Length: 302
Image (cartoon, helix red, strand yellow):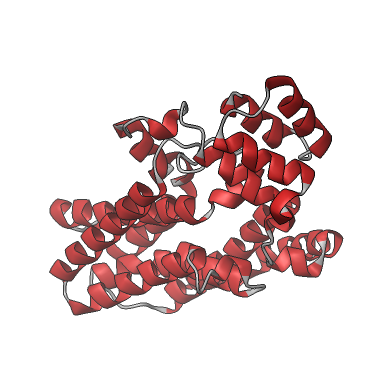
């Protein structure tokens, strides 16, 4: 029986036991995978859950990309560079306001190298721990879920990014090292057990608002040894608020797959309709956060 065909069936079908039985009757049982499928379809040996079946098919797909030697492209996909733009711009905004574009070129390059390593780690570690959810979403951007890279290699790659970036941050002094380590820890805790903050209602929103929002904006101030003034603080608060809105929207889009995967996000707890209303209400209030920011800027100009 072709494992690729089976995976396609399972990914696009509500795991119909009748369909699996027909495949078994047609092709016969010739592999260990077939026996595991029979256990699911007929409830033999107690059977096992839908997600176990899904992961089993991926595991036994010896003819797929999982058995090939990982290439540069697979590791590049782990970084999910196309998803960086918004977060990179937050760091760039903080850099512009903190330095007034007056920083030395070598320091600027060093800063953005750290930002890229941080974003790469954050998305890479998320890919590693989100295999179950991404299989349900049929998300092809996750090379671990698609079998393009082994799970062991995925976690090693992610941890190497973290260690490299933390080590480099130490070159800028202890304050930068401590601040950057907090960023890495929050990003890791968001995706990784036992914390897995993304599955803890409301902590998912707060943590995301910090490590991918306000703290990322404030990082340039720490890196370039600049004081954080009132304007910085107000912008950081507005970015935190906006990040929560974006995270709510992401959770709303992923509501069905998150429920199937057993994630308890804020949206799963509040309910889909209530979450949509809250997101709409927060979006209406968001422009009000700019009033004190514009007031301070206007006073400085005058």
